[in-house]
Image (cartoon, rainbow, N blue to C red):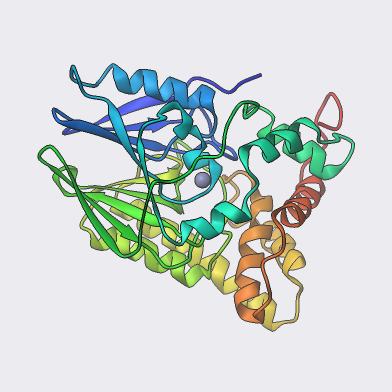
Length: 330
Ligand SMILES: [Zn+2]
């Protein structure tokens, strides 16, 4: 069954945030900026169903004769750009470095085959089915970006400035952030996964790292002067919310370094940090396997393993920590 039912939030001055219906893997926030002379998206939803919903909501807010003809993609994970197929003529802007991550991740067709063909009797198959089975990429073509840049890119949309900055490797190789000075709003992409007491989020998942770069990227978001911060996932934050998130990142970094120094292997380190239970409200604690694994690679100088090997470890740890669900393995 498809996931539907996102919500569009008016942030004022022509700016909107589209928020997915729930937390979880692949459910990312997007932006819509509308002026009398054009409109753009910041990121797209994960599959054509959700992207189509966001497009309908966007079109309700566009002046006559204006269409969404540009998409700024904060990074090359599918949950931020595979929905671009609903805008076949749009310019797709990514960092030059994002290309590297496009080749690391599966294509939409590969991911569709993987999820549809997954064996629910294995931990990985059950995990993929449970967390990715609600998306539909059966007819999704790989998205080819049209514009690459590194450094700073200054766009204008009507009277609005749009400041796009590439970031050193953090969540992925090839992240960028967007600052909208007229709206005092930043879109951070996945260098921030937010959570508030009213709207708990998930543990972040960082594929590149090191965490010091993720923390630096949060500083750069704050250095724009933004008052409103739309993270890649989770509720909209104020500046204090970003500082709180940085404390989470500091904590994970500190624990990873201490456990590495004590000779504890990466996945075991993730198990221990999960067991310490410092952030009980956050979902998907098994994602610490990825983030701590990335941090260890920077400490060890080791290579990034294949994404399926990483996900198999994530699924195995998820199975250890989750109580069995009623109604069977999946
Ligand atoms: Zn994401």
